[in-house]
Image 1 (tube, rainbow, N blue to C red):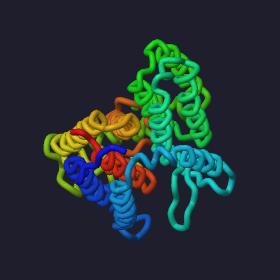
Image 2 (tube, rainbow, N blue to C red):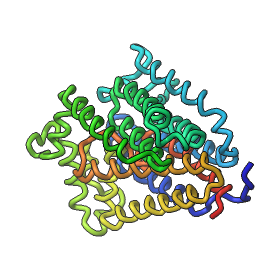
Image 3 (cartoon, rainbow, N blue to C red):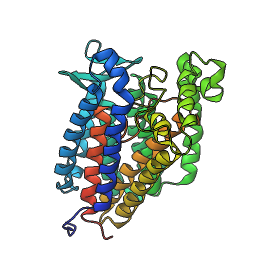
Length: 366
């Protein structure tokens, strides 16, 4: 059993709570107008986000004090439960359909998104598998194929919903973990070519995905259709200038940018707080990445190191995709911005992941 430090990484905690506080403020600012008009309560989304944050913080603090190697013993049951939930969510009448995706299961007045929890379940399971089979990872049959086989099975089930964004984050995170574990580059090249072909097939199989790609390349070709969100996002970011229009002064949240409190909250933040505000958010995420890398490098066992790599990779990939979409550099994928976007499952999952990372830091040599 690794020797334990008395305190977790305080800097990581400060960064997390800072992002969370900014997120709560921006969720209210971005959603108040829409919530007042549609629901009669300008604080509707802000209050729910505060509830999600409270649950997430409680879970984070509990897990922060739960020795991380316990997750190694529970890796198989956790991932089995997540696979079962991915099946349950596809049952007609059980899974809730939103924006064309059957990705949620209703629980009273709230809902959970199983694909979000599959991301952390896959990180824990791969951490266990890679730490126990690292000597086999250079073998395609014994190391790479079993691990990636499970990853793409989960990806296939997520795509049945369909939820390309969450599936992409999970696959990207898994590939980073497997690569760090020592998989051969030539195996990745071969699988990469197959993956590109498969991705093209997925895009071509659904007309809405083709429209998303087209709108990403030239959103003004369909300004009132597939390119609408990207154009409105850019209209929000542009006028923000250096210092922004001022907190609460966004114009695009007045029913121009659809659901600005979720995937496109960074656009509203940039409009209200400007280049300075947007840069501050990116700096905070960069600092979070730095602390996560230090924790992974200082972990006293391979399981802790791989899990830390997986968590920080998940956050980094999600941030890159979300910012890329909002700024028009990537196609719209429906990915939330960690700690800032409105969403119960996403926020709770991220805080649970940070709780695990904080516990790993209590055993770190740095």
